[in-house]
Image (spheres, rainbow, N blue to C red):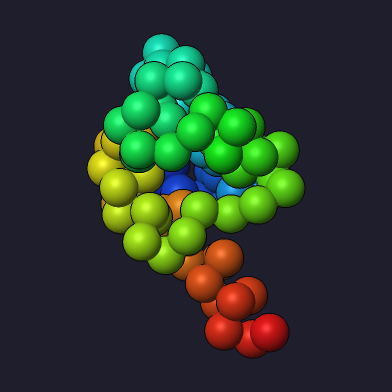
Length: 83
């Protein structure tokens, strides 16, 4: 049975999804930060759920992690719209 990666990770926080995908790609926080043109501390904050990537960065981050943006951010955007 084939299970969608998005379904498996749905219960995880955004930070957990970023961390897990970064590690699966064997990227360091510094390497991901360089690709996204942000400081390494920003990646660390995302992974600890202390902040979320800006709307501008989300497509860049999704590309760096080789996922579709909706796989990571649909639940976050729904929360942002509701607030």
